[in-house]
View 1 (spheres, rainbow, N blue to C red):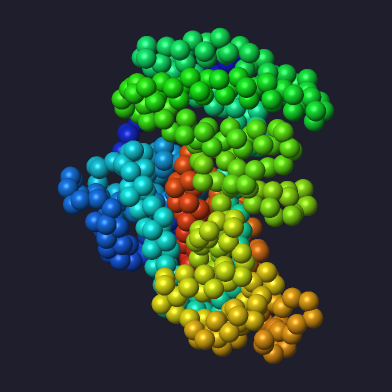
View 2: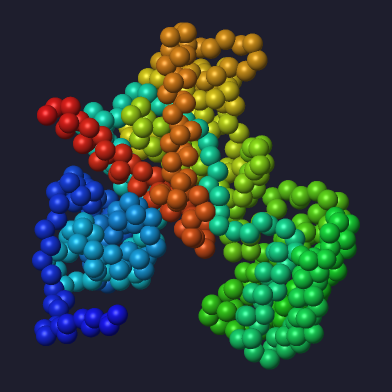
Length: 449
């Protein structure tokens, strides 16, 4: 059968098109429902706090639309740039339908950095207040829980940490001057030995004792390189710029990490405050005791759940060392600071139970303190209120599971710093609340129709 040739196109296709947007599109509805003036006020105040009022004024309205887009779609900065340039609903969200100005990924990244944790929390608080004003959330009923935000890092075993350190030092020593000559020579001699030991640990060391012997040899090699680099730094050798800063930073990290690794290799027990990542040293191991996942590596968060399903998230002060008893009052304090309200009903699990906590909560204005008691102790609320609090608390775990899903990406964000991890965590919660706001508004309209 003969192949049918396509008819040649006589005229080139236009690159400018006119599109009619549907009013029910998610991004169109979001654009029409948000108070952009208020959001711009928040962004302007954050910027004034963090940097001098110099340089060109950011395009606040357009960039806030880009932040909202990334929260709703869970995309990276380059993907956001592409969508805003070629996807009509995204352009509408960013107020760029009749504009030739383009948002590039660097500008959007810089603006997100300026907003940071404080800016994202303020924007989310505004969304919560909006939901309360419209009667979609009940500020008098608050349930709290803790959760772990896992970092996108490999399992922090000793061989992996040493291998990563050798890789980073190899990259930076190439840029070093001859003042680092002894360290460069030491690394050159040890390079193949390090590779062989790492390979041996991964492929051939099958028992704990064999892995311990390999890790001990690797630690001696890494320690020799570290000592030579430390001598060069102490001698006043300078590189200038980022390279010098990174070598000094990793040297300081290894100064703390080498004794911790040595302790584990010799005793088999993890040292206190163990560093689990060379780049993000603020991360820690969180023992959860879950089946199949006893330990999670990342940051510990507090989650406040308003009646109606809206969420408020915050990084717990004290990290993994903060007890649930202390967190219990911190959750109410954060809620009061951001929303200016004290809940009449408060619920938490038995980890936060103490007579002092119940008295403190009642003293600041909580009428029904539904912290589950330990042992045979009685609830501080009536049976009817117990059942109500249990029903509300059952929904918190489901909401936490939702923000950890791939749709929002609270867990394992593509972040290379602790600060970025926290910002992405708040952005995931913001995306959840924005979708929740649109959904509840639609349900309310259907009921009144």
